[in-house]
Image (tube, rainbow, N blue to C red; front, side, top):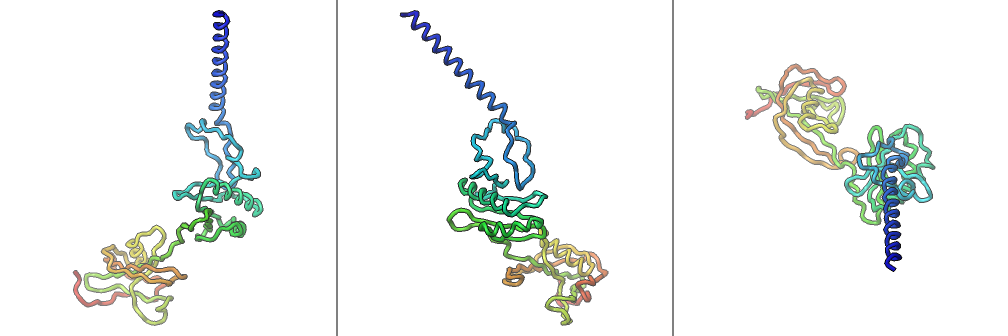
Length: 282
């Protein structure tokens, strides 16, 4: 009896050892072969990047991680910081609207299952043929730049919190005055004061990424040829529906002249001169 129990115990240990060894070998095989598994093909983005360190421990278990329902490939997208995704269409070759429609519908379904909210699609002008397809899928215009159009779509059945496009344009006026209490003024070739003979301070709009003080200095240089330095903001005002229904913020900056030879900008300025002001400078 004791011999039979001993034999049975040895058989059990051997079976456990073999099973453990088999599982361990399978785990090792999965770990080392994982980097050779190709990631999903990026239909509308850049080529896949090499796996990051430690990426080999992740092994896709289902085809749905690479494909949508019905085996339709998904669009490449980057997650934003607000629970949404951004699709940047970067491919050089033309894209057929019918294919794009299939990829888009499958991707929206996939993002919805993941609980995503807002979807942003950046369409370069060379892929403008896809705008109609995106609009029919429920997307709307958000804003446009010289080289692309941005469209947006809100997935969940909840209030849409995608921020609106820029609401304001920023303008500047340059109050340039010298030590003789002379103010720099111009007459414009166009605009509301065209042909009125009215003299005014140099004005303009702030470029993207440009500081207000830098914009004032630039506008004075462009319109009159005068070099200046920024002193302070004197005043500002806000108006509405001033430029394609957008609001306007206008800042008046005080500048100090560093040069004194006036050279008017022929394309925009009829004449420039200094005008004697009254009062004392601080």
